[in-house]
Length: 167
Image (cartoon, rainbow, N blue to C red):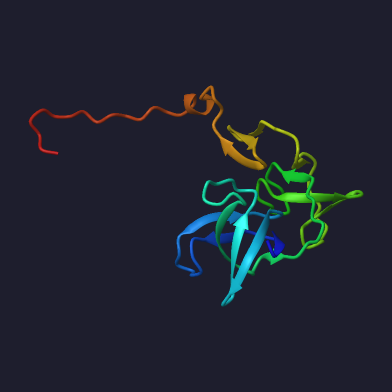
């Protein structure tokens, strides 16, 4: 890979170098991508943190430079795991710097206690009725295995079907 860039915000990765090409993945704050080539304002990239059988280096696609920064030595060690006043998405990758928390472009962000945790931790943190899960460096929210979130929903009413009626 020629160079590595870091997402400073949400960055869309498309199947081809056109705005109307299908979206193949999206990076969030702190994720890294490798640049393979530049063409007409587009970057042909691979996203190492997104596993795929399409390319052993990571998920392939095309992205614009907007929202990407050069961050030599970027080594995040914190992950956003709860809604926060900074508006960072769940899974955003950040770096500790003494008592500060830094964004990829170097800015300092103030976060509430409990909104980040070490990136190498494997949480099952409640997010409302859902739980935040972690695998392969990615976080996602999902229902608990016991289906607890389903039990307190009001059952749907079924319509009676009239025999012989055309529907």
